[in-house]
Image (cartoon, rainbow, N blue to C red; front, side, top):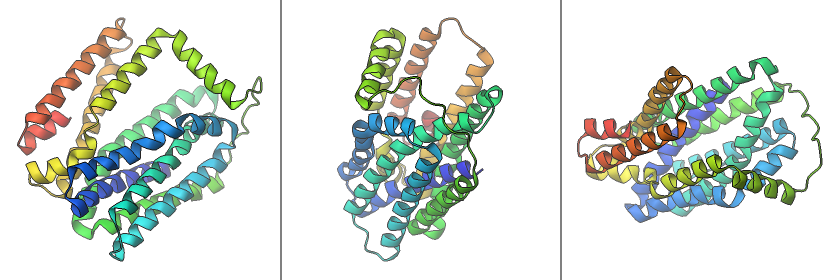
Amino acid sequence: TSLLFSAVGSQISTVAVAWQVYEITNSPFQLGLTGLFRALPVMILSIPGGIVADRMDRRRLLIITQALAMLLSLVLGLLTSTAQIRVWHIYAVTFLTGAVDIFDAPARTALIPLLVPAEQLASAYALNISWRQIATLAGPFLGGIVISAFGISTSYYVDALSFLSVIVCLFFMRARPSPPAEKKESPLQSVRGGFNFIRENAAILGLMSMDTCVNFFGAYRSMMPAFARDILGTGPAGLGALLGVPAFGALVGSGVVMAMGNPKQKGKLIIWVTLLYTVGLVCFALSRSDSSTLSARA
């Protein structure tokens, strides 16, 4: 429950950051820089983050990352409440939050096997994914409502409170110790082994390459405030809907895939789904009404 609350809080904060940057700057370029500062930690720290999560006590690492994330949200809230917020503050906090998440996400995933029996592991992973999908759907909608009703600073305080709930649970959580590694590798050897595994598996290499291209050339999410305000003429609530409705499509898609069972031609299925995503993106670019826009986003 605390994980769901925290994920919802993070989504609320995401809406607040996007809307506030555009409100301060009125510049699509500076709005796009928000996405850049969010992506930089992924490009720089992904490998070190995975190594640290693999070698450090996961519960302790999560307490540290959640506390840092809470502090960053409080900083944005206080700066906004006192009318001292500047766009560079948001860029800096966005970068630092992304850096914290790089260490937080793998540690959170690696902690699950230490909390549940092996026979319940699949259910635990499924529940974790479901909670995050629900948060991705509900969080932006709630974020838009909170900003419209109570202001941007309140959304940051809600996010900070959500991290506090996770920290409290982690302090009382008792996880099994991590199993000892079969052999001690240096960080460089671990990185080399990971790249070798990807290179030797054509299917994984192809999937990662396709996903990288789709996300790199289709990184339009940062522009949503400009689309919401300047094209659709809506406010924070409309922005929240634009950011949240894709999660509804993801839930429907997950249900369809589960109903299909284990399709034989998975490669063709992925290609068709990617093409469908492209069609939806084109429809979104051409849409000028709320209903058609939300349908294309889903």
